Image (cartoon, rainbow, N blue to C red; front, side, top):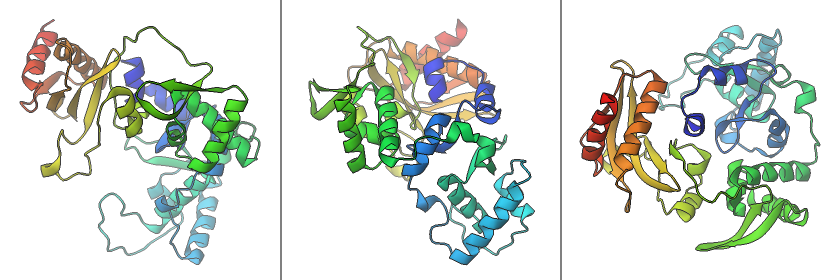
Length: 348
């Protein structure tokens, strides 16, 4: 979705080739969440990521050590394996009584995720079922690509510089959140980047606190973008930045009980020009070949063209997903106008 937001219709197989075919243009690792990153950032992130909750931090050390050794042996021949395949290869068996949704991992999967977080193993790609294919890290990122200065301060400085370049302008919190880095060492890195002339302290009307502009940030006279944005898009993810820049209050409601949701389950903000003008709750019903708009809400002051522009973007998305039509359900203050615009869009 983030690629679609920026590129429009593109060949989704490009993601597979870039992340699965050596030499990889991007690799999967923890950034602000599980993300595709550039290989040059991997070693620096490995120094600073602290995601022990995702894996085996509380596991019995003897069991963990035994599983690590057996997993490394299973991956040594070189063929990437899914968690299920690793479990079978090491002949790991256990009785589990937990049925916790989404996190009912066996011990082998927990150790795999711990080793992935530590950077001992990497993701060589994903299956059609979206399962990670694990491999030893030097099979994912060659040593000559992964090695950087091992100094943590220099690593932090490189990561903050990359985050600032991606943002163009932002606060310390914005830059640190891009890779989910700790604030105190990030502040030292920002100060060093100011001294080097990479960042310039600036003032932004209505934005309190220290703000920094990257020296290579583009300064367009106007912006003509049009995009539906994923809840996990880096433009959206730091909610305070989003509200300060766009006046757009956003909370993801996937984990909110249905009766308490305000806008819907999987809500995408809609960017039109320089303004976030609407939000839609979308579902791809692949069995029926339909992109379902379960709710559509306009922001205060949304321009009259919002429904028509959004309809065109939804049609573009449906085509990209291989869906035949867009169906707008009658929920939200924009739904009626959007349904009419969608009908017109598909007639043309």
